[in-house]
Length: 496
Image (cartoon, rainbow, N blue to C red; front, side, top):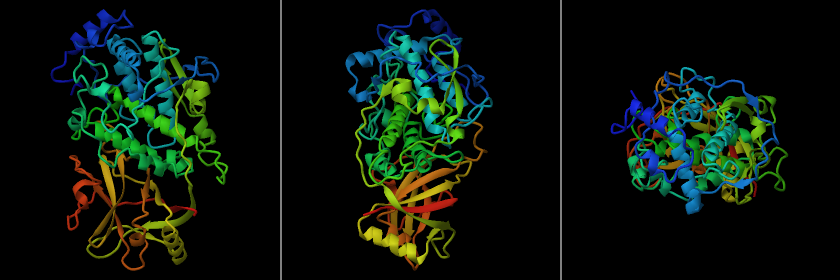
């Protein structure tokens, strides 16, 4: 299968057009070039390029450009928007032999998400998720800036979906190849101006994640994804991509970076990581609160990329942690300090209750039950942190987790698994960290007699208005996706 629109030009036509335009790097307007082009590439897994290896090591302090603010796309001036459009038009017009070209740069993501037969590793599903994407954005941003002759000041925008609940207008209008920020392979409802599902990528979810003070829960460890990766990162990916197989573009990691919106999405994820780090230093916090790992295995992880000169370069996780000084961009991130979760009770997620609603339950001691319920009575926020959650290899999409006790069903949260692309179905997904707000359901989950069970339900592809859509109706038969398991379960609450 070729990755192209049915109405798009052939590979030969694209290469002819791109070669003819290769000499220009700054464009008067995006429609002057891109209206006749639709870039083409072989599909992962077998059509990926060989990964770059080695290269010149990045040296902290070597980038002496001014530190520039990364902005919301909604805050871009007309001139900034034109520059962004021109940069993408120039990127799309590069010849296929160029190491900066749109398709090769997109395939860098496919290479590092284990969607290719040539993949060296998978940077998803572990603590590599944040630093690899930050490094990837850095070199991609430099390429775009160089193509419009403004390497010093060009910075990518972010899509702050917690505030802008529709696809940003510059990425969807005009909805044609005349717009270099457009991608025709998106969810049609969102592409037509619809809103994101009401539970996805919300300020409430971000605030919940900011209650987590440890990087392992927020950003992952060496073997497991953090909660940010599956929700909101994964949920937004799935929402924007096509809702049916093969889920292109944003809905499949092997293709996601072919949509320019991918980079605005990931700049927002990067901003949220930066904002989480900025919460460090508050009164009464443990020394490692809101700080990145100091393990050598984390800091020394190194990946290779192509830079704006088509040269192979490499960057380590340690290199990206100070993005202001080393990478020369900053964010205007408001800091809202809230009491973090400081009461932690270890519990077990065990299977299963007998009866008509079999499912895993929380097993706690009598002491923990009383202390946790007392915290709820004092109006503490209470989270259930499930670490090391395995997901079946054929699972992809958005999943809702419910508390079920008799006829009462309460929605606890969502998590997403983004399709990796063809050839990945038989592989086990990495372990996940799932964080659920159980404040309202604590009484049911911690009841002595017939406590609530935890159930995983696949979200319908056509999401109804409201949280979890139709699956919350009393009496509705639930179709369970898979059994929820975890290597470790913790109940965390605020200290009041």
